[in-house]
Amino acid sequence: MKNHPRLIAKALSAAGLLSTLALGVADANTLQLSQEGAGEALIFPYYTVRNGTLSFVSLVNQTVAAKAVRVRLREAVGGQPIAELNVFLSAKDVWTAAIVPTADGASIVSNDKSCTFPKFSGSTSSSPVPAALAFSNAAFATDALSALDRTREGYLEVIEMATVPNASLLGRDVTHVAGVPACRLTDDAGIALVQNSQAAPPSSVAPPSGGLVGTMSFINLGDGLSVSYNATAINGFWKTGAGAPTPTITASGSRLPDLASGGNGTITVTDKGKTYVSTFARSIDAVSALFMNSSIIGEYAYTLDGTLSSALVIMSPTKPYYIYDGSRPPFQNLYVPTLGKGACEDYSYMSIDREGFVGVSGDDFSASPPRPPQQFCNVVNVFGFTPNNTAFNSPRMQMLAAVQAQGRDVPTTGNEGGHLAISPTSPTGRLVPTSPFVFARSDATGELMWTPSAHTYFGLPMIGFALSVAKYNAGSPQQNFGNLNPLTTQRDIR
Image (cartoon, rainbow, N blue to C red; front, top):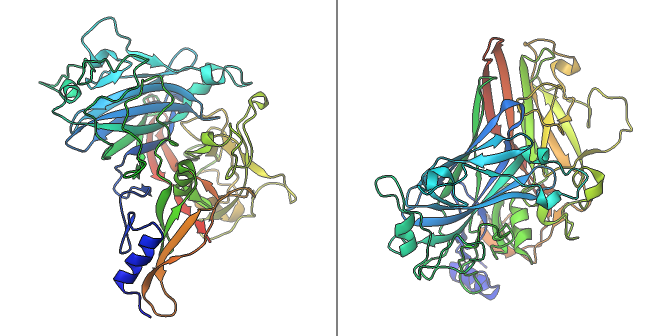
């Protein structure tokens, strides 16, 4: 019997999916990684202020309505929050800030005029107002790694809390007039939204509507280096319809909203010509499944003299939501504060040089097997290939021995380069949806069909990028050429 559209719709309605599917097209009320780079939530997988590098953040509101946005900074080891602030973007607004080193840690500074709380010197004419928001180690003060130095590298979560109608009192307050908003930050009842006790929504806010775009730029003046990446965007983060969360502008010191707050447990992903619509019992599992990959792959090139170098940054956006409360899978281990490291995951890697020479799995230049398991332990992991090979200079950088020139060392340029895949091997690295559907072409009839089909996501939530640097002038300042590209990924859904 042919799959008539009315029969498909009837079947989907019976399964409770008609609200999220329209004849094979995913509705906005499923979580999806944005193909356009704009969404309701953004992940910036890495910032650093080490080795003279500064990190510059840009947030863009592409829509014609104002927005209230939570910006949360987390450190790299365990993903603990180190700073929180609310940013109010008017229609088509751009907010910029810089993450800079302090004497013992780091802080975020901004001269932008857009409204924030806590306020920066650029966002208000009142005085005195600090120019910087210093990062705190309060969330890990009792850990073995408790120093503020831990805040010098990490990542950002950006979550839209509400759309603010332009005609509302708050909307008019945050809208730029002659380039400057009033920034009184009150709701329609005149209640200040900047008080730490204030968590009630203003009466006129609307649900989040997406359209946020983000960019991170790394600039190192001493090395003559400037590279950038775009934040990873999530659409459909907030559940809509029945059971949707009420849009709320929480106080800037609140731990909410976070990546578990959206309430949307259904995702849409594509892999190898199939579209999967998977519903999970918890919304944080749905967010994790969005990023679930069995391998993450990047190119590299390095020389022993340091003329060419590469680094890979791999991070797990949802790891902090599992390693502290005992709900460990898909992650392998819980975080133990006394160990002085993060929660570790087993992995293997395979490198192939640019002429197709395949290295020994795990480490081409090490002693013969058996070898101890490879592990990455942090939420953000930096991998290098030579001890001084990256502007990032992370103290927890892992060195990889990847093949070049058919396994021979490359002292200078000429035969360098290849690519490698890092693959988690954790036995707990899987997520199973409670309601699984697949949209794929039938082998028997050639028709595209929606069918209930049990499936499991294998691997770990992973995103990242590769940085390659070429040094061409040893003068002062150093003149370098840098490239930064997103890592590619492979899914394993079966």
